Image (cartoon, rainbow, N blue to C red; front, side):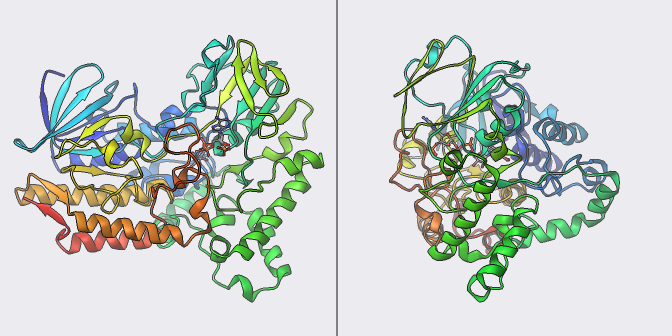
Length: 538
Ligand code: NAP
């Protein structure tokens, strides 16, 4: 890149959002480029190569809906497709539309400064290169800032160790080796279940257990795929009507209108159903009403007890500090059965905390565990972490990191006052974190693209959210959040992360909009239909 280059639009990130965003811009002939920090496209599906990484959305609801040709040509092999196929899919889409030629890889932006006099963003890359853009659209994902723990001695470990996000591209030999996994969120649960029968010894260091229910994955035959192709319009229409962006719809019969036996029989069906049926197809009351939540939590606890042979281990795997569905639910394949194996050991690190990583393993308060491999499945500085890792300086000289130090504040999850011409796809306080991701980002990309087209048609070079409009949206986000039993849960939905200063338990960051996909889509539509009256444009 010669210094400085100018684009009408710079898109940050070549993941699910960035690929679709550049497609729309190219189609409209808007001069644009994608800057991607990694050496290739794919975002989440490029990075997370750990064993067991796969969708927990039905594959055919996760794929893009925008191209009939892609829908007709692509065959999803599994109902919940695994990482290699997902990455292959994103490459297939990008190559089909020649999108790579509009992408720059190994291009990590470290600083963006708004220049009011020229109405441009000045971007600086970690390589020292610079460029300018009228508009910057971020597609940096909601889970792209991994957070390893902060134990002393981590650099001294002599075996292999990595955060799951950085799982190496070359195969990691596990056979016969002693592997330790720290973390039992969605990632840890996938890794543990996948490697339990492949490693010598597996020791799981669990701080808080998570509720988890079966994924119930299965292959998709050619006949089933043909049927799915015929149903695509209906599938996407169903997703658009459901609060979470899935085909599953909440059961409105009324929790309290059914007997306890009828509820348990219904949950038996849901437990055997694929994907998020048990969450998105359940009674809405379980998320709102303490008694309803207690009952489903007891039901799921019983299922864990049935599956784990050792009663003491089973009790350790049952969460006590939060109810079912009040943190992001991990879906599993034979996870609980892993603990019935002789080579799998569960260490409760609330009883005996980890003190340090040693050159040969992990030292807890009461034992030393000799290990060859340590896997940190310790999660992400979610939603705002990707923004915080760049210095983004707006109109007043304030950085976005400072503006959002106590939690994000946005207009519709897409703009934020003081940072003109910065448009966020899958931004904080949108529904992207709280629903089936691609379904939400397609709506976000379309809205942003329409806005950019409106700007071009009307010779607008500066767009900024009005402070009142932003305040009103934040209030709506807070209200939607506070309705839920999840409102004080310790998970990434509330901004909790024990490894990031300011994100510890006890304080809520309103990071995601929980009003549901349909309401969010209607809000976006109304904003556009009202000629963007809540934006200052000149
Ligand atoms: P996570 O849900 O935040 O879980 C992190 C785990 O690490 C928790 O069990 C946490 O324990 C533990 N942990 C963190 N720091 C620790 C420390 N210093 N010492 C000991 N334990 C520590 O992260 P994740 O599992 O990576 O999942 C994040 C999100 O990614 C998911 O919720 C999901 O949205 C997405 N994901 C999706 C899929 C999929 O199926 N498509 C798969 C994987 C991930 P505490 O709870 O005690 O802090």
